[in-house]
Length: 530
Image (cartoon, rainbow, N blue to C red; front, side):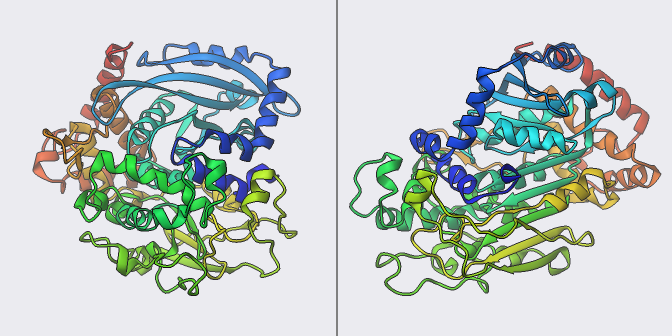
C-alpha cells in the first residue's frame, strides 16, 4: 500500500518538520493522511479492551504515563486500537517534562496472550494509517505524537523514555524491537539503536551521520538557499532558490544554541553516528540518495557523490566533505569509517524517465509518481549493515531527500527480523560498557550543554534513574534468557568491562541480577510523578 512506502511526500514532510516551525507546510503536505484522520474522527469509537490493558498497574509502573483516550481505528478484518498517551521524561537539563505518544495494537494479538514485536517510529510520527498497516503485519506500533522537540535536544530523551516504557508493557516482545525513521528520524533511529538493548533491527532512511558536516553545510549555504526571500514561513521559502533546503536550514540555529556555534568542536562528533557506530550492534538497513540536498551524500560516501555542475546552484554553494568538515574524527565519510566486513553495499540506479520532484506540485498534491512498483531494498543476513545508495545523479536545487519521485521501502528486511532470533554477537564489550554507563547514570561522552554559558554542564540524556537501571537490567536478562550461549557470553564480557563499571560485583551472579531486577520493578512505582 502507498502509506507503507517512504514516498517523496513523506520524506518532504519529515524534512520540513525538522525546524518545528513549519506547521502550515506540514498541513499541506500531509493532507491525505490528515483526511484519513478526519474520517476516523467522524466515526470514532472507543477501544475499551486497549484501555483496560493499559490501565493495569503492571503496564503503567512508573505513574508517569496516563492514557488520554483510546479509539478503534480499524474494524474490518482485524480490530486495531489506538491509545493516545501523555508521559513524563527528563529533558536535556534533567528537568521533568511531558510529551505525547500513540500506541497501536491489534485486538486479536493482545487477547491471544502472545507477545507482540514492536515497531517504533523515531522522532517523527506515524500517522494512524501507518500505525494500522504495521499492526496488520503483526507488529504493535508506537510513535511520538505532535513532537515539537529538536533531534539533538529533548527529542532524544523523549524517545528514550518512550521506548523504555514500551519495554515494560507485558504484551510486548522485548527481543523483537524495530526502530525506524527518516531524515532526523533516521538519525534518531540510529541513536536509539546505540542506547537500547536488545534491538532486533533498525531502518534509517536519509539519516544524518555527521552533525559537524551537516550543520556546517546548513550554515555555509543558508543565505544562498534563501536568496531574496525574507519571510520565514514555509510557503514563501518554497519559492527560494533551493526551496526544501531553505526551509530545513532553520534547524541549525536552535541546535547551535544547545551545543555551541563552534561546529568543529568535539561535541558534534560525539553526537553523530560516525562516532558511536560500534554501539549499534543490531542489523541496520540504511538508504541515502546521491542527489539529497538535506542530508548530502558526502557524509556517507565521497566516491558516490558527484558535485553539481557550475551554475546549477547559486554561486558559492558548497557540499564537499573535505571543505565543510573540520572537527577531529569527522573528515572521513561513513563508509571509510565503518569496517568493510560489516556492510553490504547496493547501488540502485533510478531510471531517468522517473518524474522529477517539483516543490510546487508536491505542495499542491499533484506530484507525478513513478509508474513502477516500490523499490524493496535488498539486504544481506551475513552483514550487520545493508546500505542502499539510490543513484539519482547529481543534486539539483529542487531536490529534497530525493531528486526523483519514486517509492522505496525496507519491507523484506523488516519482515525477516520480525521473526528471526537475535545473534549472540549483538552483545559486545563496547555495548555492555555503554549499558553499564546508563545503569550508573554517567555517560562518558555526554557533550557540554550551552558551552558558551557561564556554567556549562554535560547534557542530560537519561531517563529517571530507577527506570534507566530497570531497563538496562531487563535488557541483559532478556538476552541471557535466550539460551546458554547468550548467558555465557554475558558473563564473559562482564568480566572484561572496566573496573569502575562493575557495579554488579567483581563477577556476574545471575541470581543476584534477577533479585536486583525484582527490586527495581518494585521501586519503579515510587519514581517522582507516580
